[in-house]
Amino acid sequence: MLVDSCIDPDSKRPASLTYLDRLNVNPAHVKAIIASHWHDDHVRGISQISERYKSAEFFISSIFNDPEAASFLAAYSGSSAPGQARGTKELFDVVKQRDAVFPVQQRSTIFERTLAGRQVRATALSPVPAAVWQSIAHMASYLPGPQGGTPIKHATELAPNIEAVVIHIDFGDDAILLGADLEDHQVHGWSAVVADSWCKDRRPSTAYKVAHHGSRTGDTDQIWTVLLAPDPVACLTPFNRGKHRLPTEDDRTRIRARARQSYISSNATRKPDLPTDQLKRLNDIGRNFSQVNSGFGSVRLRKKRGATRWMVECFGRAQRL
Image (cartoon, rainbow, N blue to C red):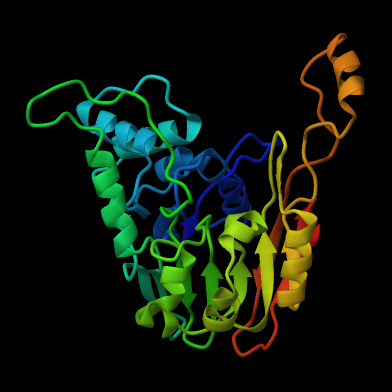
């Protein structure tokens, strides 16, 4: 089961493709591909993954932001929407490739198999029903009324992020929680997830992919007390875009206090960490400056059946948080 995608800057291929090729995994053994949501930093290259693993079922959130919905409709009409962002274009390409794409929301079953004598089940904890209904109403507001008229042309983002698919994977004796980029909201976000009786009945997870790059907006105390076992292993990815950098130092301190072990897939940005005046002088003589050996890594968690602890390995720029 593959969740989301990113491009390895060295191979220029989706990182999961390279990883599975090195393990000589038979493409037919990939049973499910999930796009947790369609932000660019989560789906770069996922259309290549979809093309490679044709027999795998493809799952997407039941909620789309307006640009994503436009691409989804454009794919069925046979023409690409103008001005698509890269993440939205990936959605368009996947829909064109496949006979079926399966939308998921809270309580959807994504994957269920008996493997090596034990039941493995992956289910979606989000988006919650209230978020789905709000999304439908939001999109409907952009359509012409019964008297005709011109549809609204501009598109806005849904904020906070209530569309992301949070995945719970139950191994029968252990569980993993993949937090995607879901943010907190009393009715539509994390607070609604942890208040749901079905979600609270899931097996507590001992490993957690921290939501929304460790941001406070993707956190609530009940994630750690209701959905996670005490002292879980936590992993996260950074976010760097202009002045927006996650996790912050406060985020790091908060996560380290909650998790027995915590790791980040990269502690750096590819952008030069230089004062503005120095960058300006460099830009007078060149372009596309970036740091050497920065910005990419991976964290691998493995656990033998019956073991009490996860074995953690860091590759590339990955490191302890």
